[in-house]
Amino acid sequence: MSHRTTVGLSVACVAALLTVAACTSDHADAGRPSRPTHSSAPSAAVTTPPSTTEPPAQKPPGLDSGETLAGHQDVTSGSASIAFSEGRKSDALIVAVNCRGTGTIKVAVQSVKVSFPLDCVADEVNTTYNEVAVKGADRAGVVSVQAPSGVRWSMTIGRGTPAQEE
Image 1 (cartoon, rainbow, N blue to C red):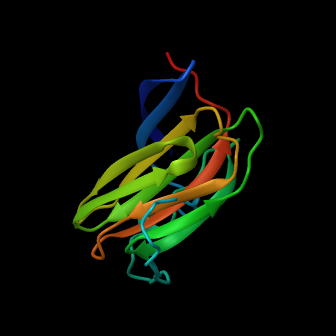
Image 2 (cartoon, helix red, strand yellow):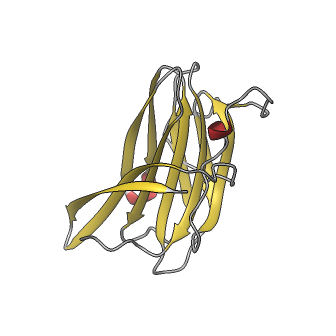
Image 3 (cartoon, rainbow, N blue to C red):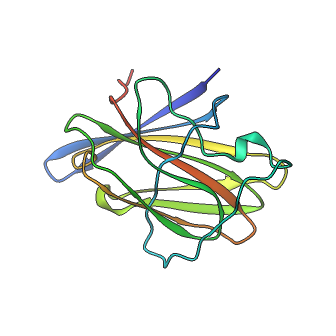
């Protein structure tokens, strides 16, 4: 069962109001493919094959019904850039990340000027689910992740209908 807590944040841009909604969730369907991310740092990622001792939540986060996959990154340590595919004009961009290990990872989507940190903890998997509904979110792009080598993370990038703010 999926659980999300939504936080809305409005950002004023040149002649337009852009909305970014972010939420944290524990996805029971964490085995679904994840989506790509982009950062300005050089890619130095090491993709680690899944092991039988690895917690299931270390797999890329899953998407909800009605959301479509645009890219993903399997369990990785270190920094990486992940490309994602183009969406429809009305689509929001979804960036969901799992992490485990001590440290903070920084996720950036340069094409829509959005970035966010995720604090990771040694003994548990933290998940963040961010939906970006801004001009240009339908374009293909890259999500970059800057992460300390001791943090393992995975990502799902998707497309979906923008959530309505209350």
